[in-house]
Image 1: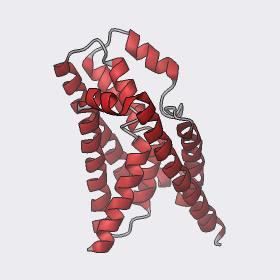
Image 2: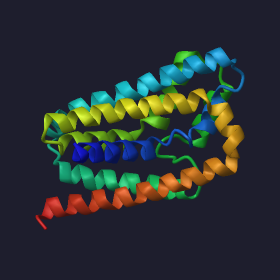
Image 3: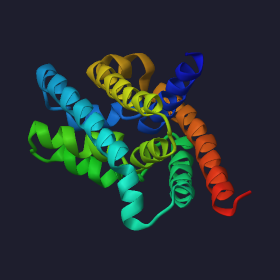
Image 4: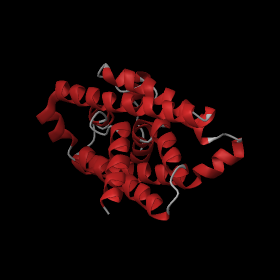
Length: 213
């Protein structure tokens, strides 16, 4: 039981660091700055649901994607680790990674007249929270899980991350007031450090598996 709890915390912690919903707070407030509290709550809810659905879909079909493209999990781990490391380096500078979303995209959506659904799905859910790195990670986790209970814990972790993202976006104004931009940058750097270690481990595991070391 303790092993499964540790596994859940490992998956949840990794996904939380990758999605980094705290770092997404300034972007959320920027693209919803002209909206009222009700609209922001609706966007937060739709964003969280989209994140969960996106990650669940790729977690469940990941193995078929590997087979279709003839890619091994080891090769995917190396490529995913490199992508994750690049993202971590950008986060260590206190910025939202351009692997997720560019500054131009943020300005585009904050300045355009778009529907609530558009804002919730793009850019907030995809690619800001459930971007390439998060998708790659859940696919690898699922491909390397051999027990049904482990797969169930991955699904539970995805749902937990979605709920956490919803809570953070729901209370984004208060979080911004309490932490301030400096506090959010510090948190982003901490997440970046965690991601850097995760990325290196993914690359090491991929190289070991690929070359039988």
